[in-house]
Amino acid sequence: MSSQIARVGGTPLPRRSSGARRATASRTAGRPRASRYLYGAIGIVVALIWIFPVYWMINSAMLPNVVLQSKTPTFLPFGGSLDNFVAVVSGGTFLPALGMSVVIALIVVACCLFFAFLAALAISRFHFRGRKGFVLAVLFIQMLPAEGLFIAQYKLMASVNLLNTVLGVSIIYIAAVVPFTIWMLRGFVAGIPADLEEAAMVDGLSRTQAFLRITFPLLAPGLVASGVYAFLQAWNEFTVALVVLQDNSSQTLPLWLRGFIQASVSKAIDWGQVMAASTLVAIPVIVFFLFVQGRMTSGLVSGAVKG
Image (cartoon, rainbow, N blue to C red; front, side, top):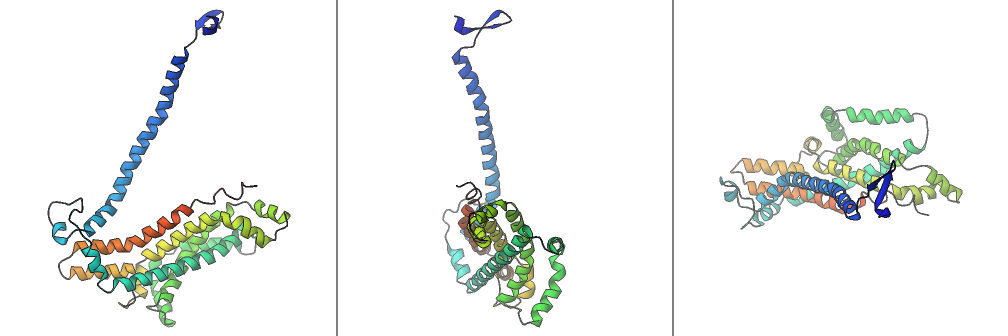
């Protein structure tokens, strides 16, 4: 009996049984679980709302134009086919535009990562004359409206015979993307303590070896994130390409899609083929992101905590 009572001020009070304590604990544990279920349900609803336009585009791409123009919407592509995709690809203009967009995007990603990485490393690890001015210049360039540079860019490319060329539009894209990429990578480089490199140099490594073995692997997520940004900017850019690439034989996918829609407007609009073309433009971006998204978070805690 004495094990089941407690004395408070000399007055014996009965203790709660183990069953009551377990019931209270289960109720307390059930509240966070209910909150997780609620948040999970809200997340699912938001995800469905976000993904519905993408689903509607793909669904419409698989349906014939007669079904799309009916008053009753068709939410499932029963009886659909890939005829719209075949018609778009067999038109003869999609594959050249795809190839040009891929080449431009790869050039922009490679050059932006190279130049931005060196610049971010310099302004984060070294103190030199003009460092603050360089950082301010990077920020100032971001404030300039792109539309205000179109005439100068066009005249510059025309003076060096780089209109309607992959090199010409790639140079303009690199110049536009590098400043923000420098700012992104600067944050990643500054977030890695320099003490790691100094400790490696104490162990006998040179500065270059310490950077390549210790710091560079930790920068992988930043490089991937910056590469994704550069790729999306180069892939989806329209206005600069519209000014520099005026030849119908030299078009990126956004220009090709614009021309494809205009060709459809001149006759009865085939919305099935328009949606199929839009899907084909979006697929490479989705594939690229799925390929690199697993590497965007890798290496954040590796390296510095090993030993």
